[in-house]
Length: 259
Image (cartoon, rainbow, N blue to C red):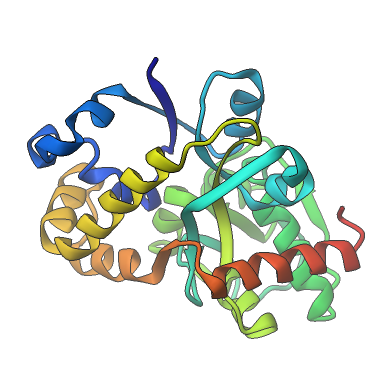
């Protein structure tokens, strides 16, 4: 039976999966396991439904989904977290500050709820406006500010003024990393072997940053300097600080009546 493994279709998953998706990088002793792995690329929002339906076995799922459903889930070492600033979950603006409403999409429940927490903790009363748009240009037609995530956020920060980096805001609020996605399976499944091989791919990517950056530049058409900075901004291992960050996010969600 193959292992069906989810992968975010964003730049933030490029380094963790790079070695895993390159046959020539595979060691012979891992061959049997690697040949059973099937990678399925989709958006963070779709993975929870796919996981529950049995369409995937293991995937990084949004943290907000995980903390609401952790009784039925098993989590692992692989995660997507920011050390402080995250660069790819930001509020951009047509203006110079955060005045006015903020356009949001339904692309990420974690980021939207994190934004709600940050606004309340900072004593801000910006209205959040749900829109059909997904990129900054579309969202900013509705409001003066827009929450954008993933690759759309990276593109937007090169064009518009960034007025809030949600990873940085969370770090200043709690002193801990913000975990945006955490790998999970259904509770009855044990995917430790899959997690182990993904973490091996993560370690390979971090130890071979130049190769990963050059490959990412060809695929995403972004400057190598930015790509290296971005990959080093993220943390992919769910350690003690990341665990405390996730617990802090859960506590804040409860305090703000979000769960």
